[in-house]
Image 1: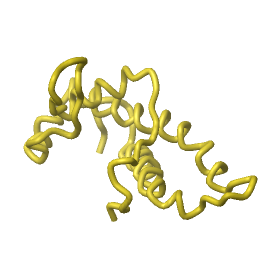
Image 2: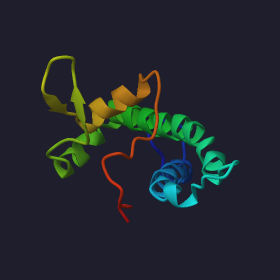
Image 3: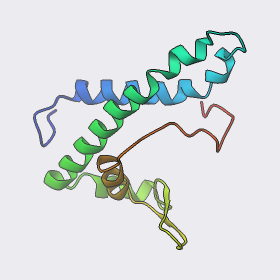
Length: 124
């Protein structure tokens, strides 16, 4: 199967796999942490930004491009009635983000980082 742009399903699946693997593994990073110097956790974390900054924008861009051409995200939206995240504008309430809005935020982000403060438990 082909998407709206010249990219294969295998490429998309691989990018998604790398991103999800990175995010799920990040829950267990504290296990690798030691008070010693060098801390092995530092070796892992030096690549986290690179993985995130390569894979997340790629997937978000492809999702947006496919949605622009094929309207694919409207089929997925019913699975996320509360959105896929929250954003708080200065002085306003939390507003849920649709998948398309989240993709836009990712595409135009100036910086990205892991933030696992909301949960200590691996979601798997």
